[in-house]
Length: 267
Image 1: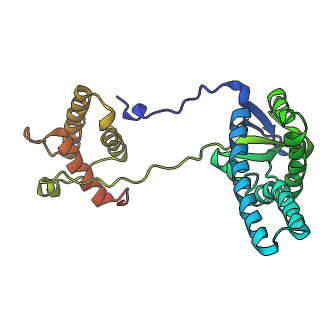
Image 2 (image 1 turned 90 degrees about the vertical axis):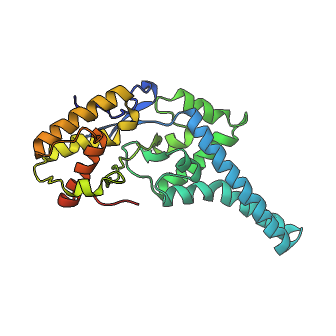
Image 3 (image 1 turned 120 degrees about the vertical axis):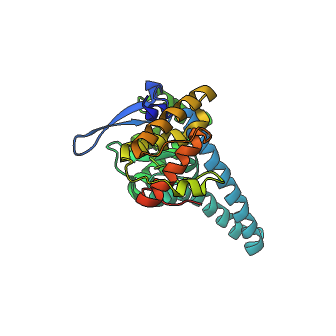
């Protein structure tokens, strides 16, 4: 039995409606997932909430600094302008196409050929965003464009030549595992010579030990016995009947790791 086949697989049956092809300048076709209306609306709601918080904080500062009057009104107008345009432009320029709302939902604005956006694209998106949100009736224009365009682009995207994609999940390698013999088996493990173990054998046993919790009890015991017997034959160190097969595997693998060092201790 190939124990590696027991590892979980990511669900690849996503709907194809949100898939889009990006042709890079090198003529390479990239299959990406564009952001739909729900995710974009949620990201926009997060950004809007942050803008409101910043707006009220800045207004309070303005009241204490200028009081009420024409100076305060001018200050408030600059605050509104800065949050309306500066917020998306600054964040999307510095964070390579992301605002805090987009970052929370793993969304990113990129050019139609997949390149990161810069100040020009961020500014055009912000200007188009005013039309999307403020053009009557109540921002429905942006909703219709996102729902009606093949790549879910609003007016700001069409003007700037951008699309919003979902960042693919980056591969994170599994942490190194440092096995130890079960309590009371330290002396037993110290007497084992693991030099005959091959890398393939170690990999199979390691896969089993990291997945024992996902196996049915009878399957777990049968695999442990089979692997322990095979390993005992390979290293010429028979397993005593009173030694549980999993304890035997842990003792052997812990000795192998300390002699060969394929992994590093982790807290």
